[in-house]
Image 1 (cartoon, one colour):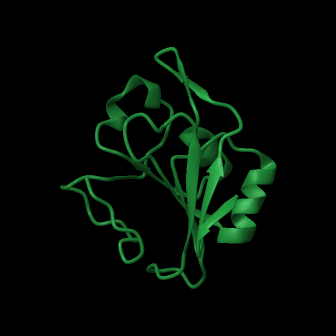
Image 2: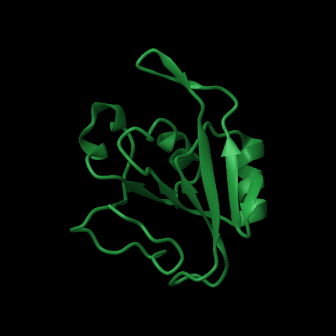
Length: 131
């Protein structure tokens, strides 16, 4: 995990993924949330997860806290959501608009959604989202 800013890390994927026959490098962002409702300690917010390893999961929890939120920012950043939600079954998994309807997202249990008609996420005081 490479520190990008205070309480913000970027993690580069070790292997590119193929998308329409082209290799794309991947990265995820981890944010340590401090000010969020119903929690008395910091927790981790994951954006666009990369392949999970035990070492990476441990590093995330050590630096950012327990994984509370796993987020897909759009319809194509879904590949590793299930791995992370399986590893952290108590985390809330957010779907971006339209992702749940895609065949590739079958098997992922989404707990919440981003969208103009959806409730504001509990981390709205720390992370602004634009849909």
